[in-house]
Length: 286
Length: 162
Image 1 (cartoon, rainbow over the protein chains, first blue to last red):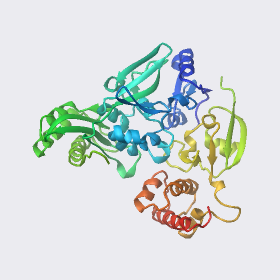
Image 2 (image 1 turned 30 degrees about the vertical axis):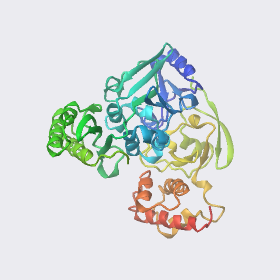
Image 3 (image 1 turned 90 degrees about the vertical axis):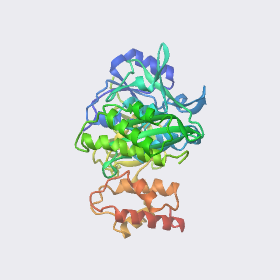
Image 4 (image 1 turned 180 degrees about the vertical axis):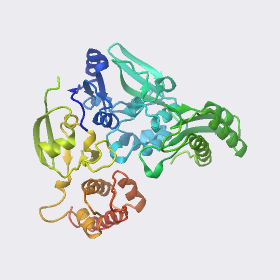
């Protein structure tokens, strides 16, 4: 099918973008890479009146360190984040997750911020955002607010973005050099979307785990931080008993649903398998 | 509100200027407005890769872009590969290795292979298969496509064509 008619605006600055959004309110839809939005428009599941492209806002195409956080602007393509030495050095978990996102051709255009705003329950990046304690920067004509990832993701395809707001950037916690991290997922026969996965990072001092951040995707309506599993690890030696406790905790704190790709029990089991594998194989750098 | 918008793009080295409806997909713009029918329309939702083109040197689904959003870009389609009656080395290897049957997906595979071999002169099989995840083929079972890309890499390293 073809998209329903819409009017098109391509502002050249963030200021112009938010003024356009203020003018059109709920009728406006931001278009960045379009790799999730355009399929929905082609299927007429999305029928925005006004499409506001940010592809000319070159001021939003940046990756930098600020206030001890890694900041990625709204126009940064996934492929550019994936290959960025800064991302690889400061947030190896994000660098490890990006090759799992979509396909090479969609990563060439899709943006990091766009994937977060889309909030697909099967997407990797919302889980990575939870594990890296991301803050999403939402801008409107009045200014900006910074929303922690755990408040930003509300439900399937639903975030806390208000009409008139645009995701202008996302910031991630920098990982300490000694931290280990891993991303694991399972998909059916190389299908674009996984049936489930985990993103995790943890740190140890003198053999004792001092910090753990674990998030899962594909096992609920929205990416989920696994706090019980984290608590099972912190203070432990991340040995077999601690890993078994974390796996059991993870399985009991997710509430997956079944579909044609995998049933609920499989997904619950999978979270534990991928967590165990991540803890055994997680590396400082990949 | 849905008035036509002016778009200027470079397609296969030639500057093209048109007025298009904002909802005009890049693949329809190429096929219907420019008459370049090499990019095929398969799934129209980004899954199959039959509509793959090179957008500023990178593979892109032309069904997942509006022509208006690629204003100012450089686009290469499969029509740009062969030089009059001489096939591009990748096309030649697809021919020799029987890397197609019905051919519907082939333009997309060729451009994915172009992107890969322009970046990686000597890819191993895993790298080739990773790149080819971009595209779906329902005829060949992929083995011959992988062979063709591997052989094309050898040819290109020898300096034949391209």
